[in-house]
Amino acid sequence: MEISELTTYIQKYGLLFVFIFTFLETVAFASIIVPGETAVVIAGMMASKGYINMGYLIVVVIISAFLGYLTSYLLGSYFGDIIIRKKLLKDKYYKPTQYFFEKYGGISVLFSRFLSLLRSFTALVAGMSKMNFISFVIFDAIGAVLWGIFYVYLGYFLGLQFQEVQKYFGIIGIIMLIGGILILYIFYKYKSKRR
Image (cartoon, rainbow, N blue to C red):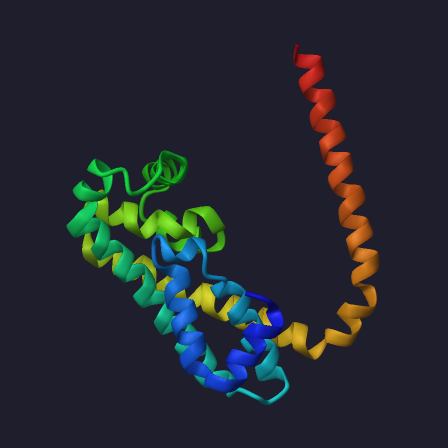
């Protein structure tokens, strides 16, 4: 979905659209195809222009993000065996998420929200692993608050500074490209020396 389409839908349907997109973005499986983060940032930009009430936006994003993870946890908790047995969750998604969850435990529920691939399935794996429900809810709530406030305010401040950001985006893009090339070059040299 294009940014202009997201903007149109947010203008037309308001917080309901943001709620649905944020919820879907944080639910396992749907999160792979739904650009919820983008919708939240755009809604934050629109709040900076007065199109959406900032306080309501933050509350809606936090609640929908919380409910999305909770839904994934419950799916994993009740249907985890079926998901594994029928290979509904591909290994390329399951294994890194399981490793992350096993390594960091409950804190992974909180921080995975900020990591795209892991965000999609950490709550599901937490449910499949039978993580304590109360612990999950606490980490989910904290994560939803941090994630929601971060992305709404990111959009808000981008909206306030849009002209400045737009003016310098070309320079930033060039800097990022050069930085990326340098990182690839260093990685290549490092790998060459190890052989």
